[in-house]
Length: 314
Image (cartoon, rainbow, N blue to C red; front, top):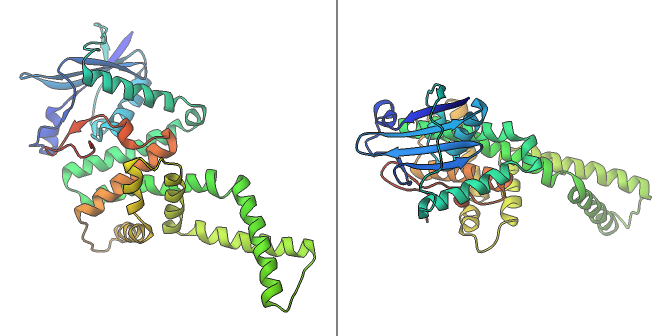
């Protein structure tokens, strides 16, 4: 038995006052394969909808969450029902250039999601994607504070994960501890009357200093994000234009974004400008894509048009 859900794009107009005709950059009637699902897109004079079909309801739920994230549309936030399918879909328009492009991107996304590390974190990844979809929904509703806050949550969570897995453990942490020990030894010799402690005492002092230093880095939201973003951009190719754009969001800018986040959380009156919303969405989607998938968001972006613009295409 197969199941399917259908999402009517008229809901963008009816529920979200979408006067811009939100749409996917896919030909009418295209059917694509992703996540053990078949995705059919119809955009004709008579109807405009998306159907997702699979033999497992869970596949459809997960497919829709990932699809929503990489299209930047809040499709997964819409109410939908499962129906039994009698007509099994088949891939169509496979040779159309746009369908080929989407299929290649979806295949790349699926391979990344099925990596061992991501299999263990699948629920976490889908939850972060859900937050972005909720933020996108608030974008349509002009709820700027809620939009900003929901995009900021994944930034915080990914930053913590980067610190836990790439920075504050393993060989890099051990190397920093050894460096702290060497610096401390030099400091004692040059500024404390040529003091020289025994090895055990020196290791103890270095361990205490190293622990305090890492704790101070980890304790503050702003510092965590700056460290995590540096670790992410360091792994990106210098030719990647997204790296240059991420580097523009420097420590001072992150400090500003953190302040906005805190003001929202505390109920303070604030003014959020389009640049704030753009930067926090860019950070959120890029950090998720880079950390879990190993590529820039644009490499997985499935072209769409909303608010009569395509924000992510270069």
